[in-house]
Length: 224
Image (cartoon, rainbow, N blue to C red):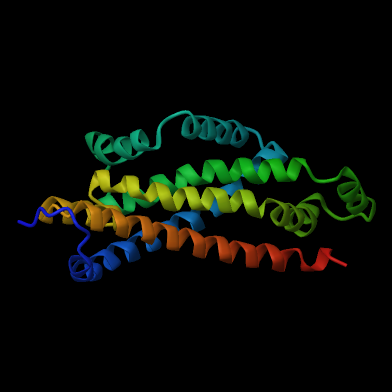
């Protein structure tokens, strides 16, 4: 057992392949959750905007439940609690479901706020042309709202990525889980935490770069 306190680059090089496997799992989980959270966000914001009976109350209740309970408690409830009533889902799928639901609540609020902040003149102008309200929503409101809310959507996506580290608590073999398992077996905490720091930073910076490109692309038609 190596308990020396200096930074061991050779150990890090040895552990790197396994850490990269964990990082790949983190990226896969995060991208899956971001995708599903955006779908939930667009559906939820549409229900809130049109105030669809019953569904409106369900969405408001869902958002309140997610935003007012700790994410870790939600993860534990879904993975450890639901089997008590016969619902069993493996750890990775459980993590994707919970993180998607968590992110979906915040993405719904992001998009709802963007929709409510749209200029009334934009909507009234479309209505004056006799365009159907649903078509106005899809073809006029959503594109403009999406363009303005990209930074907020990105912030939530980054939070989803960072919060994926909590899935180590239910045994999902993601980046943090692999690093903590390495620490337990080798006692090399410095190198593993350094790898976590660099890995998450790299992923988040890459996401930010992509978001900037998307924001620039969406705003191209609005710049003179």
